[in-house]
Length: 324
Length: 81
Image (tube, rainbow over all chains, first blue to last red; front, top):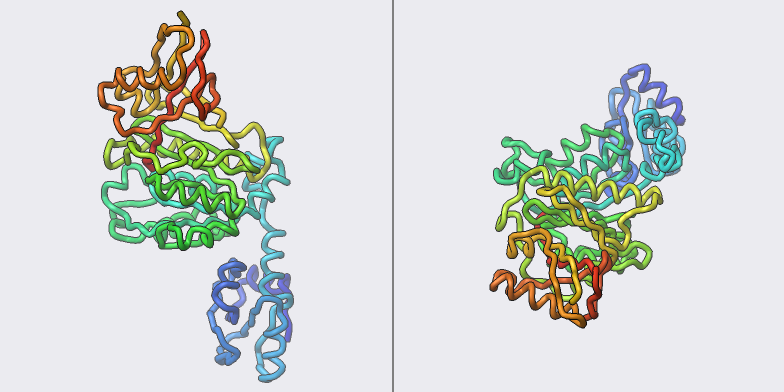
């Protein structure tokens, strides 16, 4: 038997009792999640018998249709068009009024909002800059976030990393962040990569993103992000902090300068927050400027910081923009 | 003599204790000579810190001669996040 995505949606709305079985491999499941369906994962053609009406889901609805016929499964439905058709239906019914306060801006509008909903943003580092950047990007409707960090939450992080609380100390940052972020926007996909960005994995981590946010705390990693941003053709929004001061730049945007054009050799003398200290509000401000620039680059809004370095002085509240 | 304004960020601001300086320089002074002057004024606090220079809000990767009224910014790398 076959069920259409619309009929399945109707079942959901009527709160009918049924079991959804997803037979797809891990990579397809994470790329096209079955939002709202809470499926049982069965990565094989041997489908267990369930008490309830059962809906089998594959990527296009062809494999599951064959399984039902070949195994003469009763009380079992194949989702017509599979996970792709379900994803298409979900994006159609997405209530865009959620973003009405930003779509009313002529520079964004519904077209811009759709670009945001279809965009993938990578964030390297889920610390002081990464936390606020992730929060505001998800709230703005970015469809997919890939958060990359191998670190665990420490007590000294809490004053500037608002996604984590005392109960999270010792947990993986990306896992904790995902749990909090998914509550902000249930239809967005938050992919977690509990690794440190390095020369071996860097290119794979960002190559299929639209923008990468550099929210790291060290120049060595920043230069690696810069290198892979150039290689993959993925623009990079850089952010850095020093005490009451922050920097943001749009790098490698359609051939604009990158970090290595500014500092060709790994520079010395840059201090970390642990060395020189930072007030929690400053990464909040700078991380949000990074997300603002990411949104502008995705939607295509100008002027933006492509090829420019913004320096914000939080003590005197002055800014300086330097053309790179 | 020429008058220039120097904007100081991050480590430079902490090393010199000010966020802005007005300087009178010999005509023909170059950006590299100004950097040397700033480093000497910092009395060792900028040793080992790489600095980049912007003149009139534009990054200048090579040594240039400064002009009267120029605004110079020294940009050190920052790595906190």
